[in-house]
Length: 258
Image (cartoon, rainbow, N blue to C red; front, top):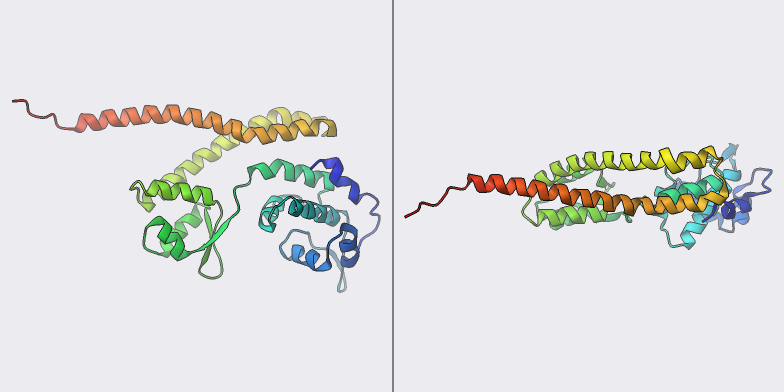
């Protein structure tokens, strides 16, 4: 979605709108506007007595929500996309924010019970495992017995490691260290991008004719960085395995020769 495309519908808003006027302006129902507001997808209106008034930023956000829904995004994914967006962002800013962030979001969260999580992990159900996963930022505990898995793919990878005989405690401890290293690697690549293409784009006044190139660079940054990290990981993993095998073989007792 281009910044120019999403900015046009908000042009000409020279006064605040009631919820009915906002819904009519964007082409959604009042019920949907209130539902989106309840999920935090829209910033609060300006209240005068019991009447709320909405401005350009609300129209911009509502247009973005409507467009993302039309593209197949769930409300949960839209909520995650807009969570870090400035509440008073313009249409163009929201469009850029969405385009920059969307490719990096993890898959849709999955809601399961504590018993289902324990069954998948092959361990006894208990609050300790859930608490440790919460500490890693992998799951959230809901009001009832349910658990929201924030990154199902990462959880599945962890369960596959456990199927190799690794205990949950050892895996969680190892993953905590891995998260720290991965966070540093991600910061390195992002800073590299910010200090080169992005800074030049901002200093030039964020010209629209360069927007497509910036978005293409952001979209390609993840797979390129992942390939570079995987290549380096394979090299270092091979060296570590060779070293560990050498040490392990050295600890074996030599058989007695007749």
